[in-house]
Image: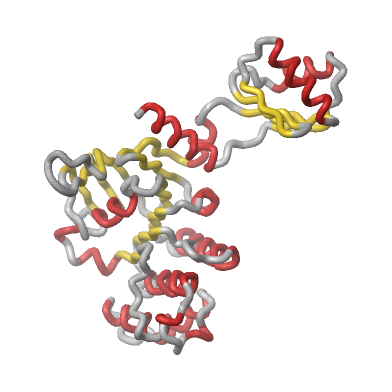
Length: 310
């Protein structure tokens, strides 16, 4: 569906550092792909190149097997929601959807528009001008506009920006339906890590113009850094004694204490050995957990490691 090989994009003169530096991506049909990175990492520039709005300085990019900047035919197969929704503020919600539906060649889009307005919760705002809408309302309408023509490939740049929790849930449900029932390929650029973890099967982390990680979320969560162990003791006094005991025995784990809970990370955090030492010392253990690493944990480990190495 999407193939980028050694994608490099620079702005300015030859001495300017590249915004994108050797990006290689392969995204399969029907995949929900998350594209993560700090502000300024080059995420939006990547989308603009994949859309054909920018030409790469070096490397090759193909979407549906064609070069985006040289193909008008693929545009009707793509839906887009950028961070700026790009809606006409002088038009009503209904008029915006109708206008874009006709641009895509839909002869009688009324039924489709009715369904979309209802789904995104703007049915009662259909005749109001977009200039009066809140940021969240504009994002909802922008998403409806992006899928009004039933695209095969959907690019979303911060789809949940400005949305309240209820609207974020609506966006997730819609995207899950598009991916699972309609088999639409979705490329999501987002800072909302919980949203990405819920929706995406695979992600890439971009930092300073380069891909620092590219794998399934499950593989990244399993392979990132050493495991953690959380031990909750009966009170803070026992927790303080436990921290002293484990530190004194030259554990290779890093030990942090928050109230009555110890968090151990590193090679010395094997649960059976830790529990045995604490029980032998007469300390009262309330709970032992091996918390799964979240996508947020993985993301910050990657970004921090790259920042230190740079």
